[in-house]
Every structure is written in structure tokens, then in C-alpha cells.
Length: 69
Image (cartoon, rainbow, N blue to C red; front, side, top):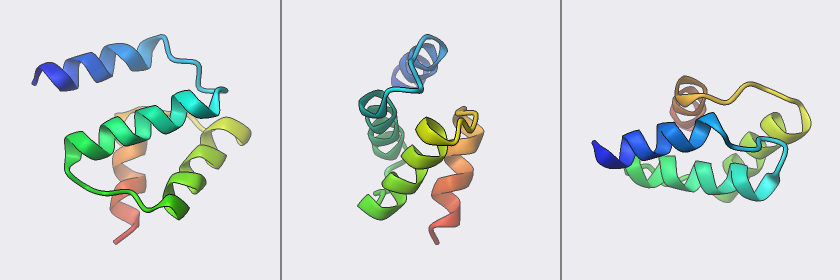
């Protein structure tokens, strides 16, 4: 639970225009969810957030992870 709260807090002040930051968040969520994210999916998520300006929140990330099935 502590890890989830730390992640949620880090999302509040994160720079979502920075690719490195977004990749780090994706990796943290992947680890917490125990769901590996293939590089291609990670690239798509980064593209949609950094370049397309899509909103990033826990629900968006969860939806993207679930779509990979």
C-alpha cells in the first residue's frame, strides 16, 4: 500500500512532457501491478502522453495495460 501511495503522490507533480519521467512511471506501475509492459506498448503509452498530450492517471494506465491482452 505504501508503494501505491508514493506512486500516486509522484503523479501529482510529475512532468508528463518529459519522456524519461513517463517511462519511469510506466515501469513503476508495471512493477506494482506485476504486469510486464512490452517495449512496443511502452512506446505507445509514451507517445500518447508526451506527444499527444493524453491525460495520465491510474485509470488511464490500467486501461492501457489491460488492452495489451
